[in-house]
Structure formats: C-alpha cells, structure tokens
Length: 357
Image 1 (tube, one colour):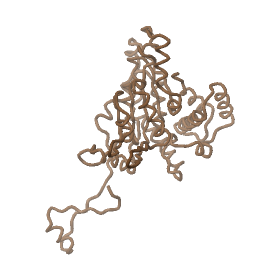
Image 2 (spheres, rainbow, N blue to C red):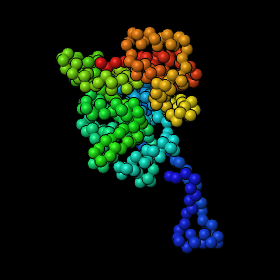
Image 3 (cartoon, rainbow, N blue to C red):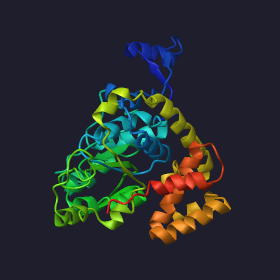
Image 4 (cartoon, rainbow, N blue to C red):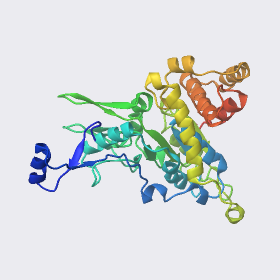
C-alpha cells in the first residue's frame, strides 16, 4: 500500500542472503492498482430497468457531481432497484481514495481477504439503526455507517422511518464531509464524504401518488409523516425526484435503456473536468464546493442569472438551496461539455429541487 517501495519475492532466507551478497538476483514484484467491480456492483444494470428515464438522468447527474439525492414514489415504482443500480454508474476509485476507504474499514475489521478495497462502498443500514451505528461512537470510538460509506454511497431506504434524532446526526457530515464523535475521554473525527441516496413513500400508506390505488391517509397522518424530515436536513439534499409508477402494460412495450457502462463513461468525463478545475483546491466534485468556491469557480450567463433570480423570488430558496442549485447546474454543464452555466442547465437543476414537504 505504500508508494515508491520496491518489493522482491523470495522462496527462502537463503535466497535473501544470496541477493544481499550479490550472488543471485531476486524477482522484482511490479505493483499495480487493480480496479475491480464485484458481481454485487454490476448485478443491476440501468439497461434492464424499463422506463424511469427522468430518474435515471437525475441519478446520472448525482453520480457526476457527487450529489445527494432523494427518490420519492409509491411502492413498486422502482426506487430501491434504481438505488441498487446506482453504484454501477459511479467512476472507479482513484488510488488515494481506495487508500482512504481501506484505512477506515481496517479499523472495524471489515477488510477483504486481499486486504485492499478497490471499489466504492455501498452501505444500506436498516431504518431501525441507532445513532451510534450510523455515525460512529462507543467507549473506544469506531467509524459508523456514514464513514464506512466514505467515497461511496449511503442508501437509506424508507427514509422517514429512521428516527428523526438519528437523521439529524447527518447534517454535519452532509455539509462538511466528516463526523466528529465526542466522548468523555476524547474527541475523534472520521471522514464521511459519501453520497446520500434516500428513498421514501409519499405518505404512510404509500399510495398518495399511485394512479391505481387511492391514498387512505388522513391529513393529520400526512402532516406528521412529512414532519419526520426537518427542513435543515432536506436543505442538504441536492436533488429531490418524484418517481412515478410505470403501468404494468407499458413495461413490456418499453425498449431497454442505456447501459450502466455508457452512462458511467459520461460520468467519468464530467468527474475528470471537475478534478482538473479544482486541482488547486484539493476538491474532487462539484458537491464539495462551499459558497466561496461557487462564487469564484462557477460562471453563468446573464440569461441564467436572470432565471436564477426569478426562481429565488418565486420558490423562496434558502441561501443553502441557492448554492446547491448552482452546483447541480455546474454538474449538468460538465456533462454537456460546456464551459458556462446557461438557461437549459439551470432550468434542469431547478426542476430537481422538487419539495417533499
């Protein structure tokens, strides 16, 4: 794992002494960083998921810019399947990222047999998970699920079913990319730069947006359900997508979509543009930009600025939402291989700010 170290292979100590004495040369081992995708990673391909092109596009944008995304739709709309397919469109880990991920997993004893993790983590804790299991802690502080998902994906299915107190713990890492665990004896910080993919039903019964089944929830039940997710938490989610249910009779007629490999190629190109643009800032993706970075690094046309001002006035966007819209628009611009955010890119970013409130 250490760079610039020369490794030789020997069958016995005698061969080692002969090599040191200069009487026999040992074989030098060429180190290579092998990027691999397990069967679990490639088991779900976007090409096999019929319909949902709007949601697939949103997931492509999320992957390209490292953005958090919330999928809302009735049971059977494909939210979980789309989330499971999401890792297949993510770019491979770089060597430095793989080292970070391996270090974190080594603390918890979760290293694979070869001792090195070369693919992006995908963590999906159950909605009954405690705050400690999610963010880390204990008498001897250990990383939680959000740190084990560092540089990968944290998938929270049935998002509102998690304890509100547990979900509120996500606010700092979603903003800063690390989590600070304070205990009586010491304070420990763990990296937690993950992409949050959350999925939820539109209401307690699940059928508020289902064209085939009526919703049985009362207004009070609906209000309490939506209050489980706080405004500050939702403000930290870049894309909010309504996932409609595809009629069964249409599933047979729909043609296969783009493969995960084709989408991943575009995502990779967009990521490379970001890495070049932010090389001096030591930032990898658009999602990592703070407000000062956005002001200095993101360019918009005059027409896009006018549209953004109108959107702020009309939808009462918070300051945090304002900057997140710009970061998503920059990712769409990178996918389009353009240099400045224009009206089409900004308009697409704004439509991903659908509220679940």
